[in-house]
Length: 106
Image (cartoon, rainbow, N blue to C red; front, side, top):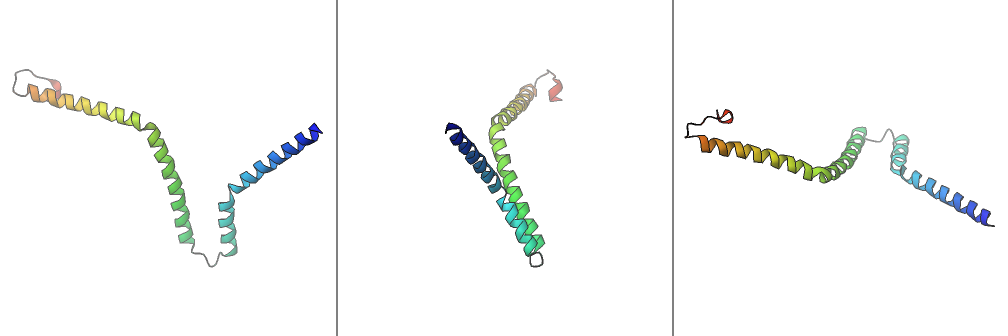
């Protein structure tokens, strides 16, 4: 009896997993089926434009998440470069009227 229940559970989980993987491609299957059935009536340029917009939207969302993840490191590097540049500018302003020569201020 335990083996039967275990077998039914495994089959149920396998079929459920298979059904969920099929759902992932429902959009593509629907669009392809629609294009095949109505290929003479479809504005292919408009279809391509909509698909490109859809792809760019998903890429944009992915880029935002990547930027959000790495933004602190990017900002740290930018702030370091700004501090160095401001330090050089300040040093040159201080040495402007003096006789001391510096290679950064020439």
